[in-house]
Length: 471
Image (cartoon, rainbow, N blue to C red):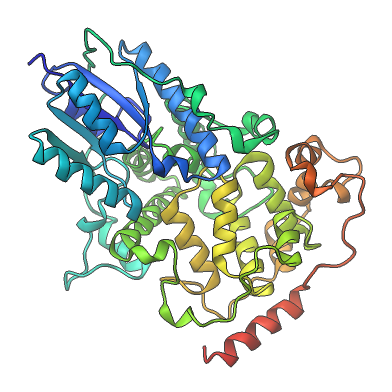
């Protein structure tokens, strides 16, 4: 009973409703929480890597306040865990599952090797409402369309969130790296100081965020969530990405709100299940993360040159399509982007500019603090038309009419595009303090007189390209 147990945390930076932590603490043995900076961390883009480090720092503080601690190690996950087991005599390792192909491959190898060495290795369900393999069609297969997936789970019982366990600390702590030595913020450069005030880091911040949403926005969520000029969404994607709040906690909160008659609550629950659907597809069809889900799109003549001037204008928020540019600048200043805006910028890149969705996905992977491999891949392929349950190829968002509908007074556009606002608000000016010096941009430059590709021309060009390919 005195032999320690290792709790391996990855994207579950919370003390409450943490199945792996609860299981590690169940027998009352000393628990050694560990975070490993392995290849999956090294390969993250600049913004998600920096935000992950902040999550690690916050979780370490929370563990310390609970009388525990967090050991930091760098290297191959199996090698680090094996060394830690040898140092401490640990008899078991617990972790919460992830569902992207790289994590699945790593975790399977770790579990096999540890079990072969006589160490108990147990993974737990803690990152989604439903496990990807627990939802099946009547024929026993997986779902390819969201609505039947939602209908299959909407009335399912979801286990109640778990309470924070009592964590027993070891008498002697293993050596730990210093988080600062990993320099995970290196890729952010001066952008970190601009994005930081927009973050909500840690379990307490996530709980506050959910509480505010339930009090102020969930009733109108179904009708207001697409409005770019309103703060009508939960913002919880940031915290769900790093497990600072569990999907199960959000589900139960939304379910209670629905029972209380708050009209938008069911739509909020559907968004949680959309996230589950992304994991479902990433698990059953892992090629969705890097390749076209529909193979017939493999031969489509997308532009694949990430250095193309139109792509550069899109990245820099200088396309001349104001709503697109506002969204791209919002992402650079806050690390996030409104969901409706994500659809607009993705549609403009893949349809008006006929550029491969992977170029957009890679840019988001570098800039979004809430980047998630499954959700982002599915979102990009939905917009491009190459994914499951995708928007029809002939549906080409008109950025101008979308702006009129979802930003009718232009507040969102003026908030983020300094060149069209006099005087420019601090939100718009801060973009120029965050971007690389090499872009050579300033608020004093004139805004593009015309879009790089206008709405009508882009739409027709896209339809012609689809028609020529037999779509």
